[in-house]
Length: 498
Image 1: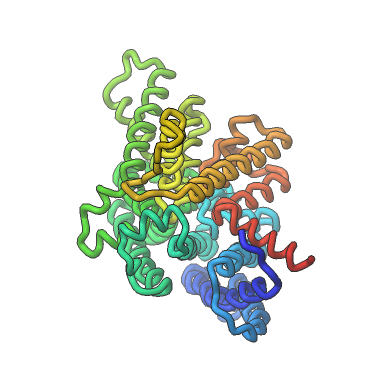
Image 2: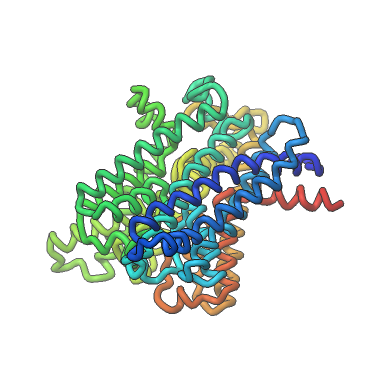
């Protein structure tokens, strides 16, 4: 990790101006829903209700004005500067983004910060127990929640591509030759622009598909935003289970899978390279994992409920619920059709493993990513071969015929272990607050993986001590930025102080 000085930090802060300028505009979008759904459409009432979003917009405007002073530094942004910028930006977005919930009186400050961080990080955990109670005048808050998912997903794609284009990563080694030396389009801005167009196209398709499957236009809009961003916020407390529709579940599974697949892969599909998706190693890992996990969960559930005498309809129902929860977990979306907390311990453990592995690199999914999982699996084989062969033997670790350097293997293993250790630490804090081990570990992994599935229900969840909520919000932040950018920020701040 490179040493950073005060000038590096100033460059990073300078680059926040563009982010805050965009945020200023984004915060005004929900006002359209304020106007449309407000029961009292008098000008004074609309102005007062619009303050919910104009106030945070003004805060972002002031931040934009303040950070413009760092424009005096005329130096090009490097990857380390961008990582610091997005790390700070995500934290500021969560803080300022909590204002609408507080101003409207929907949530208290701690819950509002939790909800905001969950939204921008596309985690989907919520402290709004009954979202449907907001219908009838507060739909703008529900839309704003979903909008944080959509915008957060765009930011995640940009961050993933930014790191990918930085040479020396396993993802760069694998994807650079697969995508081509031009990396979709010349330059990171054009690359990000192309992927955003695909992202928004899928979002529009999701809205239409959910509507055709039986959702209202408002529900379709919100759930499409959440699904493509692999977020998980729903307009109903029962999530997708509220609709009790196999067709809606199929659409949700389709969108969750799309969101969890690398947008570099999507680009190859759009230019006509249909075979690339099949050849991609993350594709093989994902569908193999989905198949195995669905089979294990289905058998576990049937065996725990006495499989003898179970009819075909019951078996199909179990499979239907299992495949939905498996896709929801591995894509890190968090939609649910059942309360997984009531499932057998083996089934819950399988879902926890899926929260850890996550989806494709360069997607909106969380977790350590399937490409890194492939490197870890190959590293085990690589180490075994090194031990079995003579010391003079030359053994290289390859992922789809791309050689991964030892230093990058060390990085992947280090990140994977740090990810797990931080999750265990989070679980330990929750256990100290009185939650049992399985629930604590599942919620910690869910927050760290930006999944949103929660085994803890009812008052135990919504009345969680403030310390627990802040710890989970912190895990969302650290997990979304994959640990090391956070460490880079802390190191830079400490270095500046010295």
